[in-house]
Length: 171
Image (cartoon, rainbow, N blue to C red):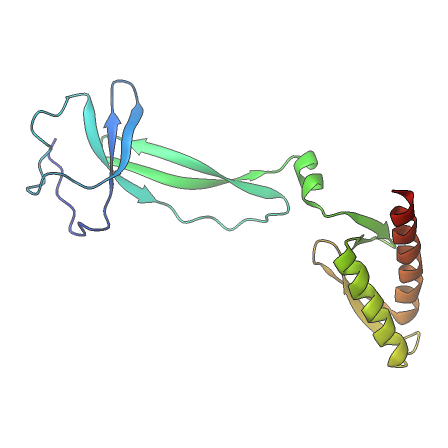
């Protein structure tokens, strides 16, 4: 089968494909014959497939992961690398959540960086003279923002501090 030589010679790549075994022999090849015909003496079980790539789909990385897909289309001489968004198992979702403690429905990140950030925020709230009814926003371990009163924030931070203190001294 004659394949038209690609116009963009430098950026077009081809996969050598064995049709009898349905296997990729090699990929990322440049087309070797300047007149666009298949090379003379090529095993009849082999063909060249134009390499194509689909764009990655949008997906929520908290609940899905991307898996590579390969679609071989011998009649049209193409091989397409694509992507499929696959739902994570609950175990995989749990593995991706950073170490945290849940207080008042908020998953507070217990990393040392977050502990320091919450301490600085408490100092700011206190030194700014904010009222108990004023509102502040905090981000949970997944980066979701939660708004609450200063009073609720202070109560959560006491529980958070006690949790982190106990975790530090129990290990």
